[in-house]
Image 1 (cartoon, rainbow, N blue to C red):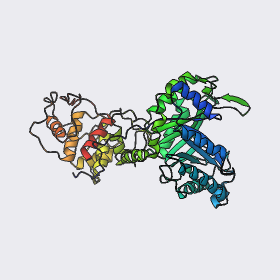
Image 2 (image 1 turned 90 degrees about the horizontal axis):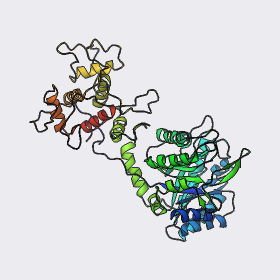
Image 3 (image 1 turned 90 degrees about the vertical axis):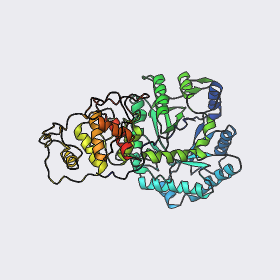
Image 4 (image 1 turned 120 degrees about the horizontal axis):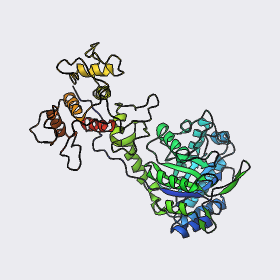
Length: 500
């Protein structure tokens, strides 16, 4: 059996954790930002601003806000809107667009290390807005705004662009419908507010939308929660805030939030989302936010560090499906490699958004893994076993037998394969040794628990090939040949065996 040529996997490491930034939307931002600084020792890193192409530029208030932030080494996150998407796309808004961009470019170029984060046409996946519910128009408008900034000489070290959707899309739409492409998007974002209609916990407020982004748009680009907040009524906001900071902080693709520090009447109901009021800062918000990065790390977004991080993620995640249950698995990188190579699709068809890394591998599943990994040819109608006719893996089992990788499970007759039985580590060693034609070794690897195993020679060959080190790190003097193999472990074995 010939090993297939595959992308490198063994030894690949996941990219490091990105910084986690706290942003804030506040009407009286100098006061609220200063109150937070007095309580915490540092400012929020990002301030949300709202600009419209219909404003007259130069806009003294907007530029003054940029200057205040720059004086404190902070960055503005500006959401740009319009009252007429078609006019923007057709060029009839170019005068206002160029006036805005020209004013911003003059401001940036008149100082040192001045920077800006821009979100063209936010929440366009909602029908509520003049620029909404039109994916093609949105993409064209987004690119027109971005091109205006770039054509004004503003590079990636000065302006970054956010694809900013609402978490919940209007009926018939999805976030992915609006995605304008990796080449024009630096950061992917979504907004969600907990108004208690009903109360949204972490999963329904954040995780379901993060899963949507990772599953349908990107596992590579950084994610920013572009606006979020919670009311106090009915639910436990303290717990909500703790869950938000800790869970988003643990997500290796999220780079921060913008908190909506305002109170407003919505649908006839007064909603107070504020965590900073006068000289008071919500103690839970304060405590949890301090675990995140400070403004001093904002250079990460602009100085090439974010781009390098994205490139590292592309080497690991590009082409692999998104599984919701592997983030805490020690075999995450191996599983992603396995999926990226087409060796697995998941464990819950037809959705296949889970891998089930802790489930035990059956002999039938093992056959399928090896057949896909080794591109084994059809067996030509041979029926080697009497117990696999009702198995979804029958074809894989027959291919494995035809290639000489398995003889059966009931020697010396070997007319059965036992497709539903779990694979032991010893059996797995035998499968891989035969599949990869691994050579015999001179007893270099001597595990203390395999001397009575019929698979001892296979285990030693597997260790010599670097596919396994043992089952009890750091000593690794045991192989545990009779233990069952999990799907996560199988991913690691195959990644080491077939990767380079």
